[in-house]
Image (tube, rainbow, N blue to C red; front, top):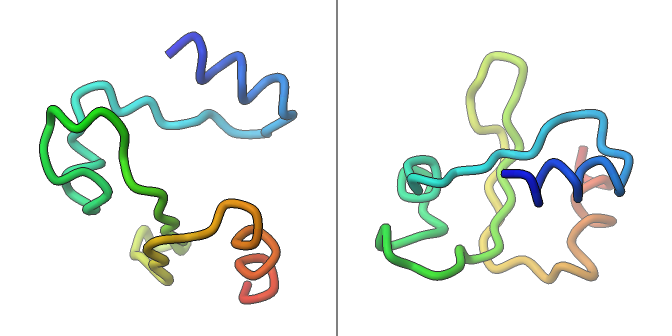
Length: 73
């Protein structure tokens, strides 16, 4: 949790990063298939103001995806 907070601060994020230590969110949304997974798959979920998933992107390319995602919003 400390590493996530430090990373968010260094990057200037205006919001906290999720630290899913129990893998509950990861399992619910699908990036993890087992609680014991070492790392989650890179996926992006855009959640609207009503709390519903508006967009879901699987198998994203970390270098190209941010620009494409911003363009779609």
